[in-house]
Image (cartoon, rainbow, N blue to C red; front, side, top):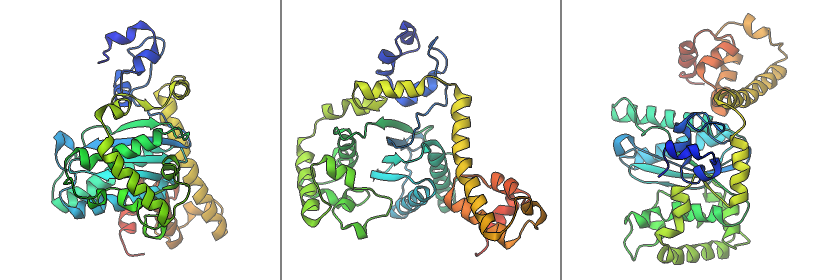
Length: 341
């Protein structure tokens, strides 16, 4: 296992091969000459991640089917806000797996919203309080170039119930209903709009999302179920990315140049860019100048409508919305948005 002492060799590539993205985040500036910020997440447009998080002290994060439905509802909401596309998911008892593609570089802001909103809803429903998840989520970057890495990680996610012995030998994979595997067997009209199936089917050698193609996918996965071994997923479990050497070098080039303030600032800039564009478009439709926002009363219906749109389509906070739209305090905005539209 990598330690702080082992990173003094001066070879960041060799060191990073030993650790996960989560570990990189916590090593801070111990590695002289190639320091990485504690809060670093490698984000770029079109990135694919295997995201996993567990319950605090391994407690259950899903106590029943209603909890899982609430998580999937929140997942759909965050996809609508961020443009995320899911390639696979699996909801276990005390942890979850997602294979998520980010057309915009917004994994961090989206995960912050998703985990925060689900925790709040979980605590309200179960009359509890405090942390639900165990620290920071793990996010392994996946090579989506079509060389089989996406297939590997999606197989890992879809077969998780088998490894956990939640399915009897005679039970088909779709008997576990809390993963995206069953959705792959359904027509597109019966799937969530945020689930993207074409890339995984392509890596499985299935050219068309047709009844015959879906049957072929099911047969291949049932065969894979009995063929997989622990060694198949060594790189996925132990690495910080899943891809070839060239892919790793490209990621290192993205990760090294800047400090924590650069990454945090860039993320905020990207999020605000979308939000400000929505504000500008809304003002144009109303025929308002920006200064009109300060002149109108805090609860003006047009401002409330814009605030609802920002909450639905972005990850910006109530504080930011209240300040940007001249609507007073964030608690006042929260109360307005809690009323029927």
